[in-house]
Length: 497
Image 1 (spheres, rainbow, N blue to C red):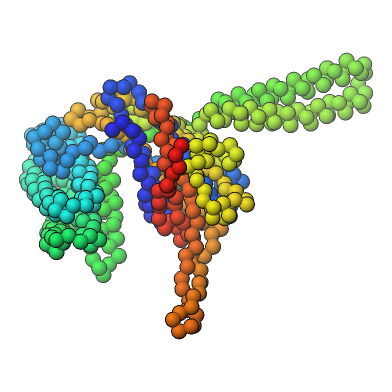
Image 2 (cartoon, one colour; image 1 turned 90 degrees about the horizontal axis):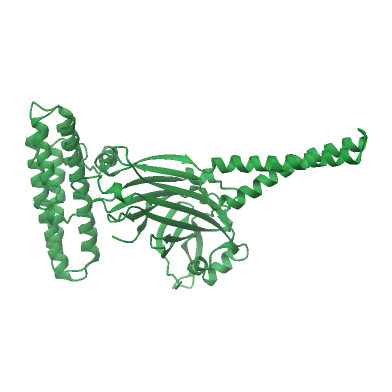
């Protein structure tokens, strides 16, 4: 992987999620990336620099930074290859049983169990996505059969490991962690098998009926298995399935925690702010002192004129102080960031940082290539052109110490870091119209019938990446909103830069 990969998806009706994957080049010492995001907001939504502050932007943003899951093909999960997660897991379980009090053995067991779950999940997801991208009917049937056969084989071998840690000499919590992993894998497999079912519904292939039955049987078998193990994650059509949703979310966090990185965020620009305030105070004091000296030189005695001169100097001193501070701070603000997040690996080793800033900018100050990518069509010009759009600008600077990333895992290569950002759009909904409008049309009997109409708003996002080789990459997305939340996200056609 040698370029930044990004995806954008709906997380829920009020949040969308960016996922950036920054490459980690093992041959380089460091790697730096700059990501600029331009939010083009219709003016009638009332979101501008007066109504939407930096603090609100950062409160609406939720960030996670984690390592990219090591890439292993589903068919190689059980292989003897170096990057296969199964054999190291089996070995760590046997070592734990032989040395149950050894902290290193406990750590290795937890590490390999969670890594196995993460790699298996990622491999199953990638395989299912690959199947949906196929167009040849015979290939689709073959790959679905292989997917089912491989997942059956892997889950059977994994569950056979249970007997290793189900022994009296081991603390119950270690066996419980294995059961959590088993439940998680069962739920995760159901998720991707349901995706296959929905895919089969959308297409027409010769083996559709057979494949549909095969996938359904395995979903049913997993539910029966979870019942037999007394796992609470059983779907029930007569329930709100609270326990199922809760456990899916919790187990995902537990098993994925091995890849998440620790962070520490601090505010930037403190020194600059104090320096600009001090310089402003110095300029103001120089003005006031100069007026005092000049008045004293011109006037020999303490007179009313001298008194008035000092009062005027004092009045202007405060204004000069504030104006000088604001002028200096605004001039240099584009070179600094609001926050700096330091990234640490689990042992506490610093492996990089992420700096970020936020502001509103005017359309006349947009770079030309961003204006082209915005590519407003004529109807949008009519809708927003007479009052313009409000433009939010967010910038992120990411630096990764590649040399330190090479030694994070002894048995897996780290070739990327995932930067996940969720953004809440509730502030954008306050001034929207009703999501539905009444429309009318004539029917076949020369009467009028009422039909539904949807009122939507378009939030345009343009992304710009500056890569380590100083090349630029761009993407343009359009988020379709109504007062109820996010309806869909489309990638817009872009013009040539």
